Every structure is written in structure tokens, then in C-alpha cells.
Length: 82
Image (cartoon, rainbow, N blue to C red; front, side):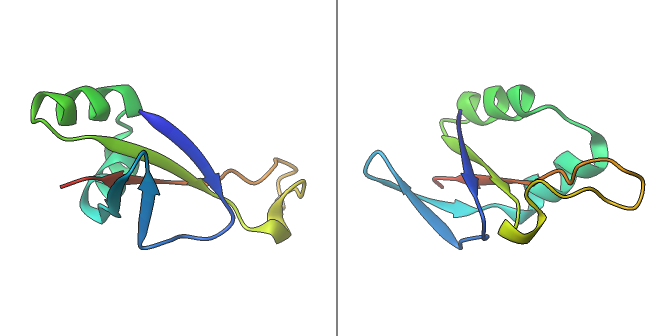
């Protein structure tokens, strides 16, 4: 699984000549169930699908800390080819 870093959330991504579309269902479920990216990638690979992990963090938040003193973490989104 390829990991990309972006400062905005695109609707689709071109990677290696293939178009990947955002899969909100998998992305939200990954966050709620604390499922790792490798488990999701292997499950999609068994189904014959490919995926790309996109970490989205705004330019304004890079290098900044939240009210608890911890750096902001990017939001993780899964893009699949089917």
C-alpha cells in the first residue's frame, strides 16, 4: 500500500496510471475500530483491489500543538481502485 501526504482531501488520485477514489466507508470504519492499515490492505488485496493511504494535514497545522501540547496528527483516508 502506497502512503501519500496531502494538505487537502481530493476526491480521486492518479497513481501508477490508475484512478483511485475515496472510500469513506473504509476510512471511517478504520478510525472507529482502530484497524491497522496493513490489515485493510491485505483484505482488499484478497478481494483483488488496490488501495492508497492518504494522510491529510492542513498547512496551518504543520508544526503546531493542540491545547494539550501534542502535535496535530493527520487524518487518514483510504482510496481504492474499484
